[in-house]
Length: 164
Length: 206
Image 1 (cartoon, chains in turn yellow, brown):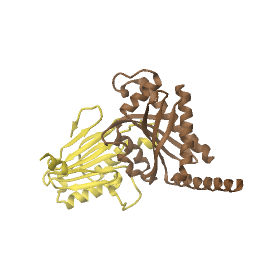
Image 2 (cartoon, chains in turn green, purple; image 1 turned 60 degrees about the vertical axis):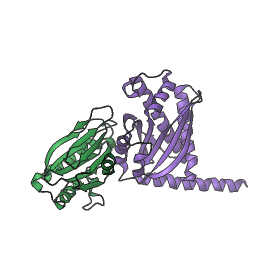
Image 3 (tube, rainbow over the protein chains, first blue to last red; image 1 turned 180 degrees about the vertical axis):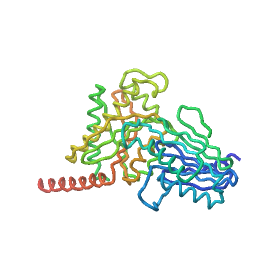
Image 4 (cartoon, rainbow over the protein chains, first blue to last red; image 1 turned 90 degrees about the vertical axis):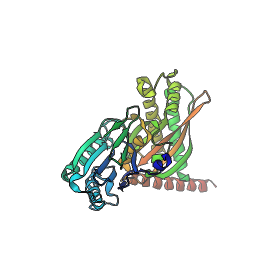
């Protein structure tokens, strides 16, 4: 049984996303630093989308990897949820990440704060409910989304696990 | 990539000179494996993604712009601190202020020295920025830097680097050079040019 569960674990890289309604699947983003893990979930259908958002925005209307940018990730993920059968009013959003591991004193490495704002703004703009977040700070996080119940576990170095 | 190796050696020689001056010991810094790889392939470079490592970051500006990152596992970091300060740290290296300072300075000297060596080799101006240190999950450290370059850079230089001390022991870490796309092109253009100049000089001597 354990190996069966492990086989259903999907690791999501920088700028990638994964969509599922399979209750056995477990979606993981390893080592979120300044990036944001954006999870959309519908409890009724178990429709789930997890995006590994890297940067706040792009000028491109149709980027090759829409999950890479906050301003395209949210509308893209919402469309994926609807095509998986989710009902818009029941979709909830949770976000994790946006840390500044090296401090926010260098402009390039303060992307974390800008990512948090961009994703939060895009979620509000889409009219989605942001029900939980674990963002900011100076620690990296590994985020795990369980399609079975929408639970999110967050593990950080030298810190207790957090559940959203 | 082979024609870039002399420039890497020149950079590491400057790192070695700087570290020997810093520690007062005869430190050897050698690149045991040098690779050009897609930036997105770097995420699993040094081991398990959830392994906690120390990363020292130094950005750079001038003729070329980008990021430098030096990473060690925790055990290697503790050993390096012992070589620098002369005593073993009790408990985690990350919670010892002297150990943090020692590693920050070691990283700063290694990366800045390497950049100065490259600048001298190619006759360019390269200005290192203020160093920063983080103790965290390896994937988080890498991703924080890769997030900044994943749009502007496609490839990066990975140098598996060995630090040897007079005790005859050594540890390895990864020195990563992540120039933006234009800067990497500049480096390779300069590499081809310097190769041509070396060949011309060789022919003249014949």
